[in-house]
Image (cartoon, rainbow, N blue to C red; front, side, top):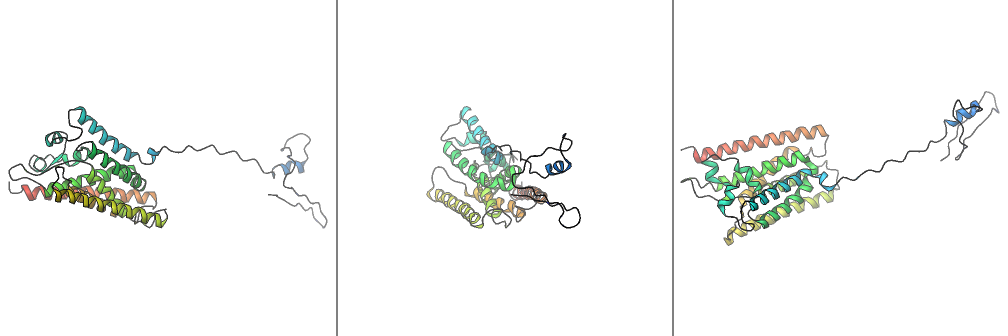
Length: 303
């Protein structure tokens, strides 16, 4: 690209100078022997651009660190269980309870409410762990870029607790301090993430092609529907290993509730999003505490 300038000294026919595409590189001001015109022309020459340093691409885990941390914790707990003598394929209910599985009488009668959380990291064998971690990894890689690492951890914990709370409410087994079911696994939290994604992917502010967002949302919906059907099938067939659809449903509903305050703020300014995310976390925590108090009062109020 050529650059030109003109300098008129009054009257008609004054001197004219043009700098062409490849001008001679002239010395800067203060160089001995350089004329004033040459010094002035030097500053009109295009300066060479400095090459941009190559940018390193982030490792894949850096885009979803909380997802990898959660998968790692679940796998670590399972390894500790195995090294502690728990069966790799078919742990007993007693073994699961020793490692923090959910159980209505323990929660409601003995007030071991921490089981609602610890049960989300305990799995009933290697196949159960593998399927849950595969789902968690895929949904986490999709959801964490939308809500951030803190949002991902909060969604996992809160929806996992919500799933186990509903399971405890439906299967309390309280009258004689027995009965109920022993529940374990991350699937309540996985369904929670699915529920949250179904809401989040409705945000009009997402910087993604509309057709791609619709495709992703349909995939998540079909994932939830298919797994609900599989869970119902194990209940109808009365298989030895039952899938706790109440934990799935509780997690799914918790995920919907968690994500509602964030839409349509997903894709908005950072400070607006962070404020909404805190509202979602604190609001969901309060709701779960309220529901836990209600469940405990309903079953244990007369004791």
